[in-house]
Structure formats: C-alpha cells, structure tokens
Image 1 (cartoon, helix red, strand yellow):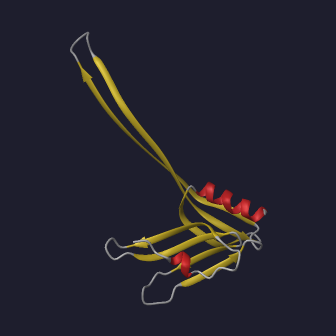
Image 2: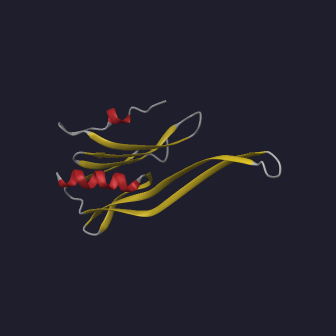
Length: 139
C-alpha cells in the first residue's frame, strides 16, 4: 500500500519534491513513522511516532542551511559463492559463481550556523542525497 503523503504536504506554488524517503512499521497494518523530503526550496521531516497523536512537522528553508554533512556512515557488504567440482584425481574441473553487493547507510545532518537542525536517519546512499541537497542549494 503506497501512502499518498506527497499529496498531503502543503507545497508553495512552483515547489516540487525532488527526493523523499518513508519509514513504516508493521507488516500487515503498515503505519508511517517518518517521512523525509527534499524539495527545490526546503527540507521536510515529519515524525509520527504515536498513532493517537498528531504528527510533528519540521521544515527548514534551503536558504538557511549552511552545510549538509553525512554522519554515522556505515558500509555493509554481502557476498555469496556457489562452487562445484567434477572429476577425480588429475581430471578435475571446478567452477563457481560469485555475487557481491555493497550498501552504504548513513545519517544526513542539515546544518545551520554549525548546529544540526534536521537529521535524516538511516538513509541509503547518503552521499548521493547529500550531493542532491548541495546542488539544489547552489541554484
């Protein structure tokens, strides 16, 4: 089930969402916990930790952001090797197949005067998201 939270966010005329990430809880009864977005004008963070309470909205104008920093950078690598062999003694034949994948996870801090104002936690490819934010800030 896809949430239509993008449609519920009040955007200014001419503002568009360039990147977003959603964190859910539950397998059968999915509920949105956190929504993070970068628009062409601002940073948006919506925390909804309790279903009985109203969500907490945090917005930060990109013109106020002095720097974007990746913190808590982690790199996870996985590898699988499947091998086989045939023959005996001198007529041996071996083969195999290897699959490797690396995933980088990190937190992105949007800094204002040297202090983090909004932090996106657990972002895949944090360098790519940081570079997107910096390129939008330079416009």
